[in-house]
Length: 425
Ligand SMILES: Cc1cc2nc3c(=O)[nH]c(=O)nc-3n(C[C@H](O)[C@H](O)[C@H](O)COP(=O)(O)OP(=O)(O)OC[C@H]3O[C@@H](n4cnc5c(N)ncnc54)[C@H](O)[C@@H]3O)c2cc1C
Image 1: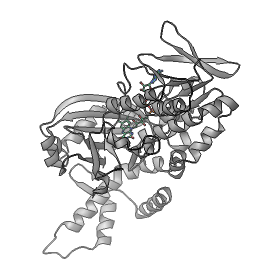
Image 2: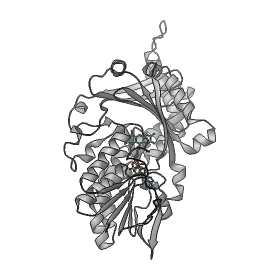
Image 3: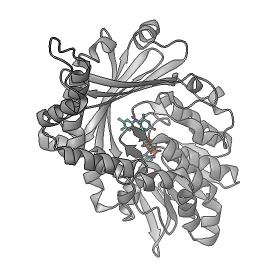
Image 4: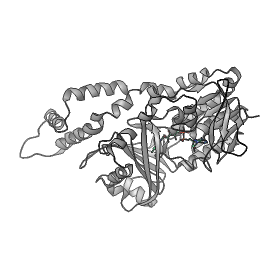
């Protein structure tokens, strides 16, 4: 008899299946794609430290493209670019910090760990609905001829806009407003060209996050190095994108044509194009994490952390999946899902979300998105422009000038600075 049905073999589902199977439960892991990761799109960086305890030495065998040893944050205007560029050799050594990896590889690898632990992976199978009896989830309907599958616990790991969480009435109505659309191109380039253009060697890789490149539509851009390709894309508010009547692929084309980005992607060949939604509402717009007979994990619960300089979904999905799997037996035995919620509250998963709950509103605000990149770039341009024969103008004067040019009142700048200090404290 099946004890746990996990729906979705993304990072959340495979992590849940791994832990539940290790606990001796009979686990079925359902995946609609022909193999795990086949349908999954994302930017490109996985922060794997969440796996340290459960898969010690995971870095020896995970399907890594490159280890991120250089992280740049760029503020762009049409003609300017200001970059904060950080490098660390620590990040190029075990236990590492983040890696670029393809989801088809990474998700298959993690699902394989669940299978090794005893979970049964069933691919090309869609969970089409919940089976509910006396107010309790007791299984799922599938698109297979033999149809229904029953178990005392279902773990929903079916990703953003979760069909199962929706059916159970667990997704907040406001969720759609807080969805962003991510679009990504994979561009192939020879490995040595990437090494040379980005100043890296061997397995070292680069993560570039960009702000001010989305025609004023709240969001940002990214560029990651893989072994012999680049992942380049944007993530933008779905609501604002629709209102602006702009096509997301045009934003990626803008990004690639920016004078600061074009030399990196020159001559690269388009290999793949993908688009996917991201739940960016943060702590105040999470789904309910359970209903009798069901736990919700990962993006299905809105647990992706999208807070300005951080876009971390995979590690949050794994963190919540591990907790769901670990507590599966006790939830089955007691019928009480509180230990799952408590485990998330005691881990980075809800602690980071709670601490950064104000970040989405601040980071996606009009001033941060449309005015501050120009203000900062103008300020820096003023500082570094030699104005001889006139003397240097002084930083405060330059700040006032940049603020005026970009339509920012200094009291708003101060207020946002203080708000930022509170949000990111
Ligand atoms: C453009 C973009 C860039 C991103 N960049 C990053 C990044 O660089 N780093 C990072 O950490 N995160 C990033 N994210 C976020 C990250 O991709 C997600 O947070 C993460 O994938 C969530 O994992 P999950 O397991 O909850 O859901 P998913 O990865 O979406 O997995 C859900 C799984 O469920 C399956 N499924 C869905 N419905 C059913 C069904 N009815 N029956 C059976 N199977 C089903 C799907 O096929 C899929 O395999 C990005 C997202 C996007 C869109």
